[in-house]
Image 1 (cartoon, helix red, strand yellow):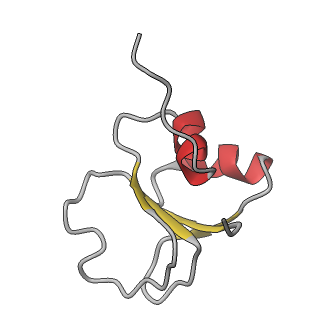
Image 2 (cartoon, rainbow, N blue to C red; image 1 turned 45 degrees about the vertical axis):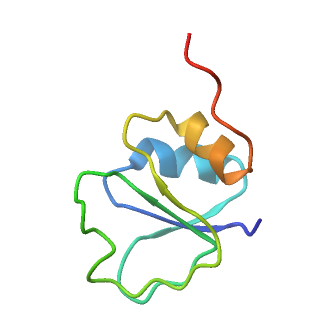
Length: 82
């Protein structure tokens, strides 16, 4: 998958984790172009007022660790719950 990811502003730990693994992280804002989008799940209509150009997944990071978000971006399933 591509390496440009739009991440919602309050997801700082996710941004830092992805940047450390080579992703180009940009703020989620109107008219952004990205290969994937990561949202916090705090606002059900987060993408409703935005025009986002993405060919990849939109990941709801609510309840996920930065590593779990990374695994989703890399196409790997979440680890099973213990």
